[in-house]
Amino acid sequence: MQGPIWLEGGLFRKQGLRFTLPRRVILDTLCKTKGHLSAEDIYLRIHDSYPQIGLATVYRTLELLSKMGLICKFDFGDGCSRYELARARDEEHHHHLVCIKCGKITDYSDFVEEETRLIREIEKALSRKYDFQINSHQLHFYGVCKDCQQGNNSHRAKQERR
Amino acid sequence: MQGPIWLEGGLFRKQGLRFTLPRRVILDTLCKTKGHLSAEDIYLRIHDSYPQIGLATVYRTLELLSKMGLICKFDFGDGCSRYELARARDEEHHHHLVCIKCGKITDYSDFVEEETRLIREIEKALSRKYDFQINSHQLHFYGVCKDCQQGNNSHRAKQERR
DNA sequence: AATAATAACGATAATCATTATCAGTAAGAG
DNA sequence: CTCTTACTGATAATGATTATCGTTATTATT
Ligand SMILES: [Mn+2]
Ligand SMILES: [Mn+2]
Ligand SMILES: [Zn+2]
Ligand SMILES: [Zn+2]
Image (cartoon, rainbow over all chains, first blue to last red; front, side, top):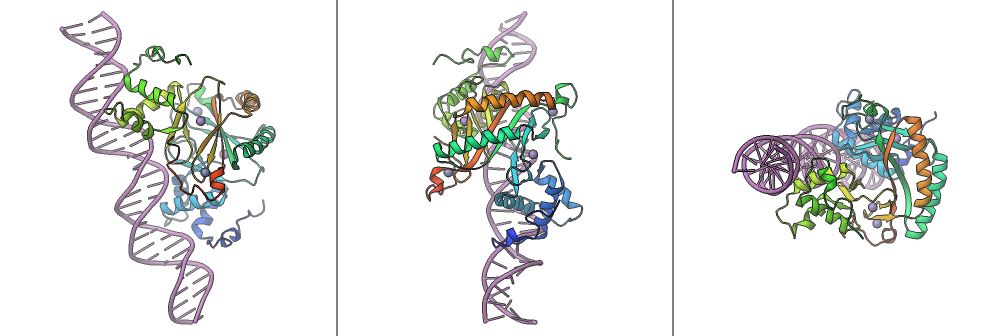
């Protein structure tokens, strides 16, 4: 657990950007959670220790970090974008199971070795055939989670607030 | 090119639903295009031949058709949901290339045989391990399309209106 | 150090896709 | 024909995201 790449802010300064407190705090927040947080989730979490932060800043910062490749943006179909820390290429890469009843998101890394091999091939071939320079991919499975298969968990939910 | 499953509306009546003109027309519209249309796209296309249709009806109908499994809903990150006709299981199944510069969506079906085999395996294993009953999946590759790699096509666009 | 240039912030208003409401209409059952 | 209920279209409301703007903080320049 050594300091992540951005810790000294070099990545920012390199582009004439500043590594400000809001940016640091938002990165830290995403660093500390395994969940998939919305802008408002993040805003609320930060609010305790940094009440003066503005929601607009959270949105702006998430957009920036996303474009810098430090975080990933997802849409799981619950009406807002959700974010997680980007892992280094192929280190801890994972995909998602999305419950269409309760909205729960499950990360999985199983089979990623095999997936990765296939996806690499596909990427290479698609790049060639469609002249498309591929940066990233997302694989989502949609279905019904364990709890929702039984009667439980009927609340279509503001889940994902761990 | 024989009539699709819903043509007689049996699928609807079976559930106490009615196969009304708006529903028919919206299905036809999606049937006629290979693109990925937004609610408003559909609304505008229909407007010529059926000016009295309401935008709310379009949204309502898309939601319904989506839940019935007749159409698929996607979010490619351009601020609105997009829809396409659902194909029968494994017939013409395809995945997507998304250009992060201009928003162009490219369907591809290459490698789907191999993908399908792997995805089947993964589905089976995930179902077992996470007790997740999988219904569908989406695989999106994000990158830069041919046109955007060169200087062209600088307009980050209301693309996809073919 | 003082000044100038500019990046970033927070508050707030504006935008815009999607949903909810509601009164009216049309289809089907008996 | 009459009742019941599904469905529609117009319109208002919602809610996530974005734009605006005046202020503050950081860096570069004199
Ligand atoms: Mn994840
Ligand atoms: Mn498609
Ligand atoms: Zn669930
Ligand atoms: Zn492009």
